[in-house]
Image (cartoon, rainbow, N blue to C red; front, side):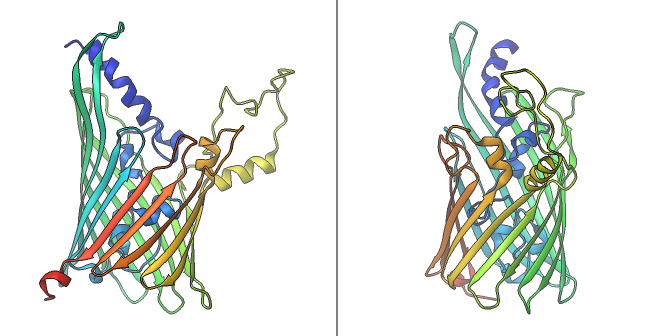
Length: 354
């Protein structure tokens, strides 16, 4: 099979890779973008791709390893996302704690892009091929004292885009301050520090989706509500982009003259692109409702003629017997909203605690 035929099939994949992430204009600059896609239904419901909430939820550990605690011991989590077209992704996690070493969470993160067809420029088909990416993740967390904890994720990444293979390694490092007296938490994360060991094309390594993030959460004292504020891409101020098809991109479509800059408006727009807000209504220990808003997602994915609920997300969590289920939907575009489903349980409830 010629390289030309292979590239024709890969064109659809590349189009997706350049726009799959909620931070689509940032996402096209790197490889392994699936590492930053929101996996947990709880995180998705609150609008972002990480959270700073320390309540022993194993589904948050993949995004923020400093939240790993010994209370996650023997917990297991499964997460699945029904994304667009035939694309699906998710993870499976399991936690163990060892004395004097710390607590660990092992995870397998995957994305399946579905089946593609070989075709040449005339449309003649020459068979089919599959595309997928995997990341094996070992997370470690340790409590330093009553207030501070640290954590790290080590990732081994494998990508197979038809006959093009790639392998990389990455590390996340994080620190968390948690005051249990007033249920206030702050986390600082540095994600995807690493490199591509084996590139798709020899001698052409690509950067990983490096990012610095800061998050905080606070549960209100007299209401069953917790709010969350996330700051993303602290390593880069300007997250905007110029769209040549957008009449508001800086050129007056009638006169052809430059539109005068609004410095205050531009500053506010750039600032808001870094902020994700969310909240949880904690109705009981067994049921909660969640909402989120992602300004950058709305600005990049909206259609001016019909804004709809793009950028908003919602979900809920409930417990049945030994299982805890979370479900959410996040509005990315008018064409539809992905479904997020996450389930957790503690295996000790079935086999006895040690």
